[in-house]
Length: 193
Ligand SMILES: Cc1cc2nc3c(=O)[nH]c(=O)nc-3n(C[C@H](O)[C@H](O)[C@H](O)COP(=O)(O)O)c2cc1C
Picture (tube, rainbow, N blue to C red):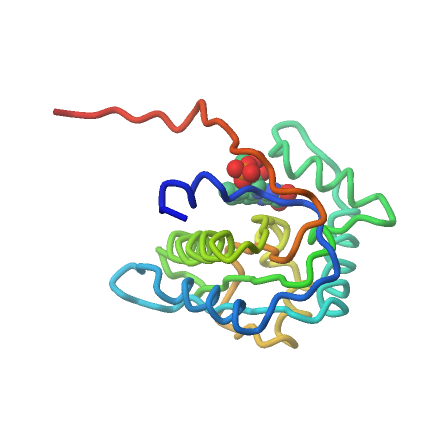
């Protein structure tokens, strides 16, 4: 696949089969993340790679509990309102049943934490696409990055005390046939000549 085809082929997939991601492929995905640029070549991103579905379900359960305590308010980000409302459902699963969840954490107070983390994640999404592995960016852990219950659980998974999660994505194989390219109408470009 050419790079042009690759960036158009990546789509957010929201339904996964139980099929695991081969370790070799997972390592290639992680490696792609490690090759992302970082501010001042800081390389302080930390990937928490969940490959155990039971662990993902435990995290989902905490996430669901915390969102279900919230009430949508005027001006709340639309996607967060959806998450708050959906968390009322017993079967709510922010991970869409995926066998792999990668959280990207970075240092508290580091001004490029979000930028560095997301660049790593985008590399991983594109590497996954190139390997025929589906993915979806998921924002719920980032939204609850300072939530005490989420933190307690993530510390037990290897998150360090001076880190917080800035972005995450799920990976796996999809029961859905691959989605068509999604046309882009936004992301305006102004050329200054
Ligand atoms: C910052 C960010 C947060 C996102 N959060 C979620 C999310 O929590 N759940 C979800 O299903 N998709 C999420 N997405 C995926 C977007 O909905 C998706 O990228 C967009 O609709 C375009 O579709 P495409 O990825 O198939 O091109 C997120 C994407 C970004 C960049």
